Image 1: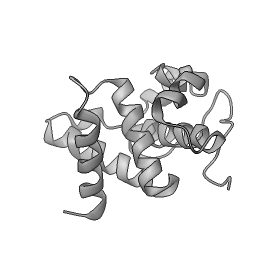
Image 2 (image 1 turned 180 degrees about the vertical axis):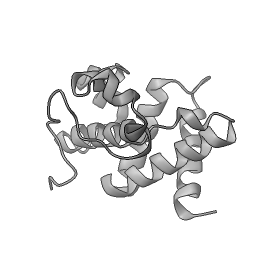
Image 3 (image 1 turned 60 degrees about the vertical axis):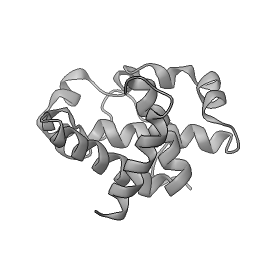
Image 4 (image 1 turned 45 degrees about the horizontal axis):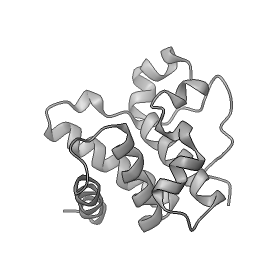
Length: 137
């Protein structure tokens, strides 16, 4: 088991210790934990690989989406950097849009996200630029 697999598994266990299902809020919480534990760059890998592995194990590999996974890590990390010491509840109170699973449609056309290229590799937003970027310190 790779380090990122073990990290993802531990973070997922933490998320599910207080949840009855793994919905969007739990995805965002998992991402928040990954950014705190690993930093933004490694969190992209941990979350992406973990979700991809989980989807394959569940017999639904098509559920993994490379662009969506990275974009959510970037969004959560951006908001963490605005107030690094706050807990998850404070983060979502300050940024309720993070709990809107359609948030990325502000930045991407639905046809772009539905395309196989976006599902398998990173695709830049095509409606509006993100206010964040992995190249930002």
